[in-house]
Length: 296
Length: 318
Image (spheres, rainbow over the protein chains, first blue to last red):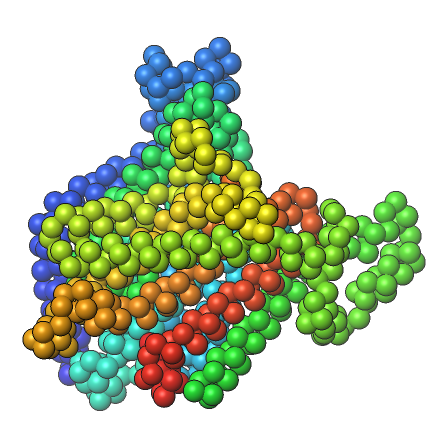
């Protein structure tokens, strides 16, 4: 028993110092840090939209419709119904982020255990592979459309649909990590000391796969944000009057000639948060020294 | 080789069967009882039961699924409730447009991605690498439908010969066909191009530092030959994988791009069918796209075994 405890503390020590080294590397990467700060600020702004937005997002003011950015009281201008654009963008950002994080949660909760199983057991691998292929064969948009047809379009349907189509990626990353880690000497040592598969997976594989999973998350969040915007753009995501960035872009199409800011601002917000997420993800990948998983 | 292909074929059929089960269950989960809807105002239980028998809904689930499967295999995808035409015919009409769009997109983004990826790896730390990294970051971060809106509003209005929307069949006017598809394809391909670029760059960096590239240099091969014949060849297989993995995303993206550019493709058909509550069309599109995805990946597996003989022997993919 004491031998097992000793092994655990040893693994902890190795793990901690690796993390410290990674953190030092990350702190030296200026671009990565700036991106992280912008991402955090944008996420906070989106989460606190209800408090910091100058106007309620649905409040119309027909006297001040299609105002240019910079108009007094409407910093980023107004749309065709006189709704304040900055308030709508903030609320939309919050909704997009919650869909993206919800999708990631769905993908991790299902993908991580399945990935571990298929990395350890050959029989499970065959079954999980078929499951992955099934999900890959269902294009994400059609999955979302199908689910929206059955239950009606909503924020949570968008999150679940995006999450389900992300599962194969998580399974693949977790499977490779499980196979890599379980072939390492300290895991063999744990088996020799009498640990079962369950303990090895929980105590050694999962903590050591964390870096790869975190890096994957920073890559998947921007694509989930874009996927949500795409669904809302088609009218299949967040439903009006709740503001969403994708919906704003779709509404802006008919005014793009006369009121270009309506198309530019929500799009730029998506681009900026995605660029920052991707840049931070790259910095994190370098700092944690994680191998690229083959696709983004 | 034969063993490898038969395993892949077996997996493909399994995947399609699973998709058909999911679609079948999905249809059962749809709100509303079809028999009740067909009965209309006459909600007499006997009438509803008659309709139910006519639709085969009174039979056990397994039997119903079997009938559904037989219909699928014989190409009977049902009738569209909005247009009254056979779903198979509507898909046969729209699918070629999407396939042409996807084909141009794949060619453009692979060529572009390979060129920039190789340049970034070859001139490391110089401007080609910065340019390539910048482009791939933008490609991954810009929603392509946003780019599409901006392109229509600003580009198409500035360039008079570039059509902003619509489609011309290749047979009628090859030039017009290309002009109508080039902008949608370029925009649809941004993310695939970015992914190919990144992957090519990291593979090429590894390849250019390897001993076999050094060996070919020592033996006096010229730089173009070293880069293209020796280093790039090993990166191609990863690019092929990426295209296969991206096929699904491409189909999803095509739906939005078709919607914006007014291309009569299968994605647009699917999106419109949601708003028309045309479930028959929807499930037909899901089955056909799954089949397209499976066929593309079979082709990818076949390509693997052509490019890399090791896979042919071991029967495994990387």
